[in-house]
Length: 244
Image (cartoon, rainbow, N blue to C red; front, side, top):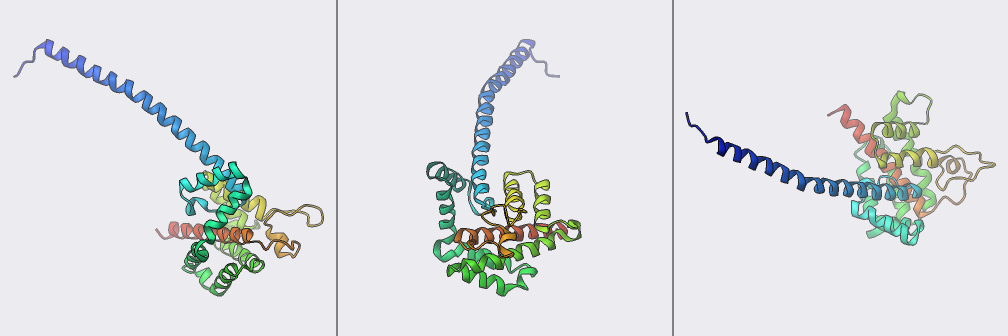
């Protein structure tokens, strides 16, 4: 059997230990920089989604890239929330609303929307024509109807749109699920006294009960399209879980 010189073995052990020590010394700064970078990324992401939440912009995690979201944050910090909302409006209205057209066409793969294809197409045509007083009340019930399909009997007596929002937030603890739940529960479906309380900027109850005359803006119309699109995406997720 081959016998190795004990001195050689000792030197090999020392060399291996020195290599390990050097790697350790080099990795510590790397992991520190990585942790610092991740913390900064999470801070910026949190700030950006706060801007999106305050504006009622749902589903941006699917429609905007990370750099685009950070651009919206920079615009909000420099020029204010209204400028950030205007940037989002411009993004979705580009090329005669091509993104919204593609989005709404995609809904028609869902049986619930296929049965209501005329409503979807009329709403899209109204939005492109600037008839926002027609799009908002036409689409809001569709978000609620499809939410009912998702929630099923589990919702009980709850508002189905709120129930779906709560379920998603409980299932996925992410900044965008928090944005969705907060906007749906505390803005769109917020309960308020018609006679005393100021209406939220987009109130399902105030609009469909005929209490708000000035809801028909391009921003609100876009918000409702994005709301419906989020519900559509949740329906697909729910279907895929049932039929993997």
